[in-house]
Length: 181
View 1 (cartoon, rainbow, N blue to C red):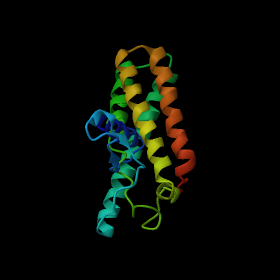
View 2: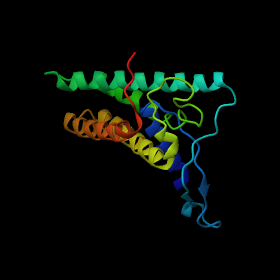
View 3: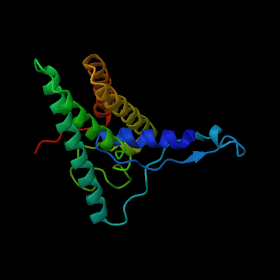
């Protein structure tokens, strides 16, 4: 059960950053008790079979990240206004949470800058366990923010939005390069 929850959380985190969940390897700590299972070192999913498939994953990742960015800007604009629109915040929070759930699948091997220009740094695949942990943190923060938004309490929303931003920054500072179009 814990593995399923951890895997779901990892998927949610990455989706919020616009990344899909990559499968993780798990080892049962006790064959007689599945609840005692613990995850092993995360590894990225295998590379897509063709360049076209890699480009499709990269496009999905880009679009997911763009949607997360747009939702984040909508939330910030609303929170900065004199009369925040809670319904708008809730809708954007749900979008981020849904995408965060997919993000761990957006970074399989073979979808980095060696395929085409991307904001994803090679360090993602070189230090994947750290990247996957940051993505899991993002998914968790996205779910917590969505839950806070559903309460309608602006103090809870602002606090959870700050935590969400910190989780995005932790990953982007290390694993995202600036792209100039």
